[in-house]
Image 1 (tube, rainbow, N blue to C red):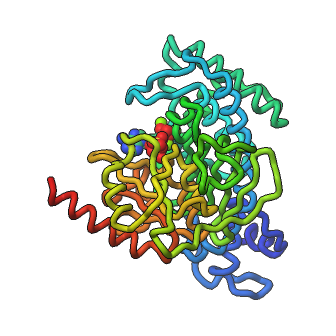
Image 2 (tube, rainbow, N blue to C red):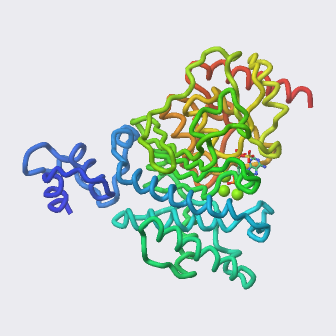
Length: 404
Ligand SMILES: Nc1ncnc2c1ncn2[C@@H]1O[C@H](COP(=O)(O)OS(=O)(=O)O)[C@@H](OP(=O)(O)O)[C@H]1O
Ligand SMILES: [Mg+2]
Ligand SMILES: [Mg+2]
Ligand SMILES: [Mg+2]
């Protein structure tokens, strides 16, 4: 192992795959700089754990390119379904949330494209959907529709190798990973904001990558988000082109391009320090976040503008380019947040200069499996406004608790 690593390390190519990442680490941390590359520590055959500093300085260019391709293709599939949305496309999962052929199709496309583009890497995916219902007898027709959609999408994207129903089921079910704090795991919400999708409103294909429990890259495809800012407009009345692709890699900032492929431009969160000038985002669905609590917090802060209610992690994307300054999310008691609802969005916002914490001011911990264990809610804003927001949140939570 040491000899193979040494010769590859000497070639200095620096390509990004799990092997070279290990090399990079080995070259910097385990070997002396002599040409013989003598180990200065004893080498463990186990995959080395990266320190957060190492993770922060690594490049994920290849993973990012694959993620952008996967999300863009999945977005095309979703757009096609949304256009032709028929009542019969809507199914109820066991938790009664709506799920459409597009949720499954998007998950299959992303899973397939990532595995194809990064074939030399071990693959682990934590994703929202599973194929349980599609494997039942009454799921066969839906499965065939999904397979057809997936194959049409892949063929249009230049990937010609028709998948069978079984391939599609396998691609969907590769999303069953538990994630965790070791190694790399993709985190996917194939359609975030399914209710928005069904209404014809906002939704996002949200894909993040965890490395040693930290989100190191994120891609948000938001097919219905206007390219121009939502500030000063109602999202339903904005005319003009829609379809945004946000992407961020740790340490390199956040960029946005149009889904049909314009030049990416760097984006930044709003720099407002004055809460009176800040507008805030929250869930469209009152069942997903306590609107009465957020309105109390907004009042305390002196926010003048009415809340901007849009579905999905499109909120994180819009915030990353400064359309508003605050995002607050307070689910009702007992709800457990899933990592795929925040992984991509959180890195998109933090790389654009924002801060994402729970209601206690702690960063979100993506290393604990499929759920985020957090205190009460999620708040997002720029670094200057965060202390004021946190204060207002904590005071409001106390007031709410004492009034019960
Ligand atoms: N009860 C409850 N409380 C909080 N959150 C919930 C709840 N139920 C669902 N969800 C999750 O919310 C995801 C949709 O995102 P948003 O809440 O930001 O958008 S929305 O405006 O409400 O549609 C949505 O994501 P998708 O299932 O991918 O659409 C859910 O994971
Ligand atoms: Mg869902
Ligand atoms: Mg979701
Ligand atoms: Mg979803």
